Amino acid sequence: MTAALLIVDVQAGLFCHPPLPRKAAETIEQINALIGKARITGAPVIFIQHESGPEDGLARGSPGWALHPDLARLPHDRVVAKTACDGFCETALKEALDQLQVSALVVAGYATEFCLDTTLRRAASEGYSVTVAADAHTTKDRPVLKAADIVAHNNWLWANFISPLPLRVLPVQDIVF
Picture 1 (spheres, one colour):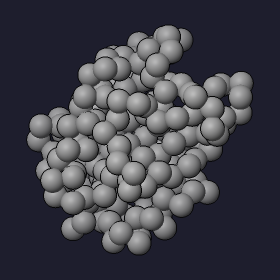
Picture 2 (cartoon, helix red, strand yellow):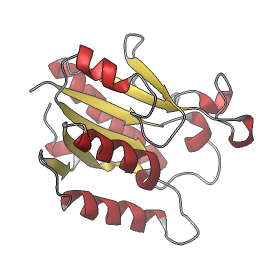
Picture 3 (cartoon, rainbow, N blue to C red):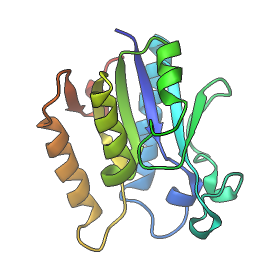
Picture 4 (cartoon, rainbow, N blue to C red):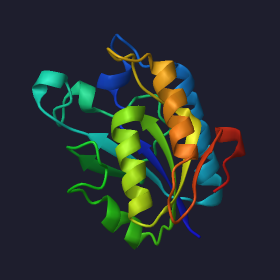
């Protein structure tokens, strides 16, 4: 089984301006720990980068659109552009995963309840075995829920998700590529 690491929407405009995501710095550290684990085994590292209009600071080429400067990104890492919550929707992600012969994904990143959730559910529907890094995803407080509650709820939900292939939720220290 070939695994890849997907890092969803960890961008300057989402992490570097108030209000900051919950445990922003710790999340970046945990993502970098995952990147290190992936690199040791030769697992591909794929960054998914959201782009939209100038109204939300994520227009292509803008400072906010850039991947977070503290990520341990290398020039050969793939970057997949997206315009919807789903990292597979009208993107080159499936093609890249097929080309790399990936059958399992480790997922981390930003917008737990939006882009991370939608992408990992789609991955499960596409037939990938999915592992969510329980302590390497985050979001911001929302009008109806605090970020900590959103993260805890989604970790529970994903751990109980019914899918033909495993959908696991593990802390970074327990993830093996």
